Image 1: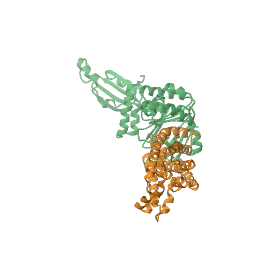
Image 2: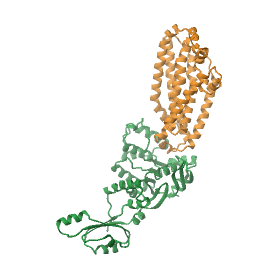
Image 3: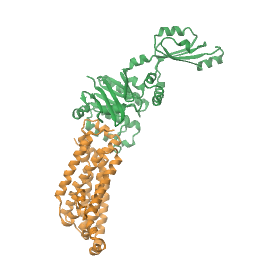
Image 4: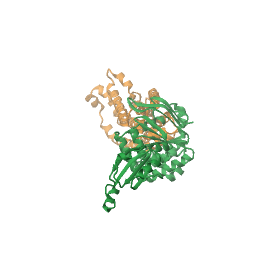
Length: 333
Length: 262
């Protein structure tokens, strides 16, 4: 039985569309990534799934309970963890008192254990907490009752990179314990690290629903070749190559200075979705100075669903690329 | 059960003590001033200076005794208006305030019903109501005896006890406004504004053609002046306030249960 099942789930705020016609299922034991830029409807979907607001149309079940059935969904919430992107807290109390209160509402079976991984200063008032400490407190509150399903809205926001990594590690460990996750994010690099499948949401509608692996397969390879000969983009219009560009790379400048290569050493870049053999055969027809074949950034795939005209998506892409730069993941050739 | 009431009550304790100390200081000042003012007070002159309607509206004729003086200066002003506003204002910030700052989300993510949250938040208003009443009761009881102008203990207890339904009414009204309003500021403004408006309507409408309008004012059902000067306790008024409180709470519960938390 799916842990989350939505059927045509729709939420309008008056005339303003929040989400429209969302239909998807999250299976037990799965980490489901829910991707989209800010304003795409991710938070609306989550708030509707948590029962904070009622859907305008359609239906959804979470852990088998109908989200609009107040009484049965109230009991079910005891098995759900909720991790908001910007958690709000009563700022006049200490973290310890707040944990004690929330523990009394939902049960506390493992806050001690989680506090070893995420250590907000419990004896300080929450009003004095940094953004990262607030997020860690929210993490403890989301997991303290050992829920079967955790619904997370941009859960790593506010965490420093070390804690982000620790959190993703924690998610993988929890998944091994059989827990399920609904993971909303606009950062592809983190989603690809932990998610099994992703749904991409744009303007309130689900535009793609796929395995992370096949999405990466479909996105192809990013090929970059430094070539000593003169070359034109047209020469690389082979089967499976897309968006071929030719530019004078930095390597070419260096070589020219050495006087080893006369003429223009150029960099050819393109996305390639075919088999390796024809590509390599074609490349060997040239004098190769350098060659890199990497997994195409998922951002590029992502961009197909948003288009270059979407300024906001472009901003997200830059942010995500920045993330990826820190950790390149070259593919074996 | 009652975790929320306990949590919210703890948070209200500091504010409650501050209000209790403030009203105690005000009460002590009035008690210290009372003997000299009462000595020099000339009711006849007062009723000659002001119109009979005004004298009746302000119950100025009652001011010549320590009971009347305290009733008007402390309870009429301090309880009907100041403490009433404090309770209504605090209640108004409960639901709307928690939605505003996002704390409602983490609470509603737990397996609790909205009815329960709302009711327990309302219960926590008993903290300021009880703390302030008990502290000031003791201050007035001891104080009036120290200046040798004692007020009957039964009347004092009654004036405080019967204020509880009045204050609960404003608490329930504040909670209802809070469940309806889009933001904390709006809720607080409406709650405090309504209290001030009904207070003025009752004061102005008394003895005029629109006296019936005063029936709508909660101040109609809790009269500290009559309690202290005539030892008349309006139990049915208290009953009306309690019934109204329950109705307001039910309306709040229905509103909050159906509301989208955004």
